[in-house]
Image (cartoon, rainbow, N blue to C red; front, side, top):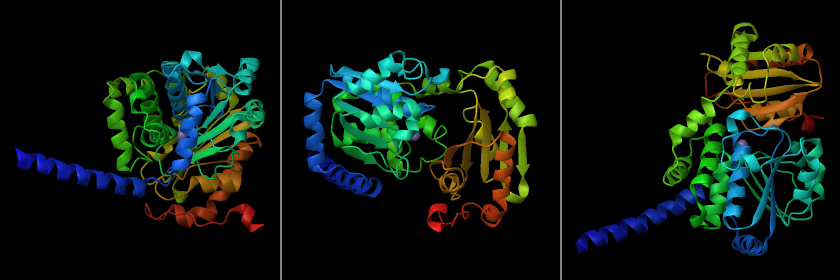
Length: 385
Ligand code: MN
């Protein structure tokens, strides 16, 4: 028995060492002691918290924002989530979603929540303009202590504390690290909070199919599951909760609006505003369509072009090392991650698509390299000039 206890002790020591090693290996952001003290001090005196995220909020944006909302409300601290525009119906079941203020619908309430906050969290976005024209000045003018939690490249939001790395699956994963590894608020990890974080992690990784090779992501998921949440139910709520309009639009996209260019290992979908109207489009209906192109054998680069009012919304996806963040930044003034990025284009739909096709020849050699040796090595346009 004693021997066994010794063995356990030894094992615990070893596990601790391993944990520290994993920490150093996978964490490119570790808060300094003084930052932890600073934030802990702010948390004790804070009275009003506001949390904002990006335009067209996705599961990770809403999940991380609501997780913070739960964190503070559980502590008895007033909190308010402000999102720039409406979020998709398939995320409306998230606990606390009914308390979100949508700036496009209630600008005064949004402005008051942000202006009246003494602590502002900005999540899942790297620059104020990502929150859209209405919310951008609210963030910039906010006098509160600002904390950024984000996993996009090149964070450029002026803030008091930036917790940002691209070495993570999602903002929700990063928020877990922030609240529970760094600030050690383990007793705050409730069922509702876990539900929000779990949703963000699975939606930002395409149900754990990309940006999720870090073993720590799975450790976090397991800790979230231990709070009693049902991962299968969450999956069903997110993915089996669509409107008929989505399936009809998907049918149209795949049958008549998809172009496959085998010579560039590329496939793209284009949808006009008439297509959306005829199929009773609702926000979120086209979420994930871009991934269908990538499911094709030999396709390494997928795009979708959707005409929305005066602009065309563009999304890119890739397999392996083809850096669509760099592609979006260089040619479309957009951004995102290596395998998933987005942008807006002011050209009409047909011209946007033609422009996109005109860019492909310069990437032909890279795109047709066998996966995963398809790394872009172009220079950023701004550096060129
Ligand atoms: Mn995200």
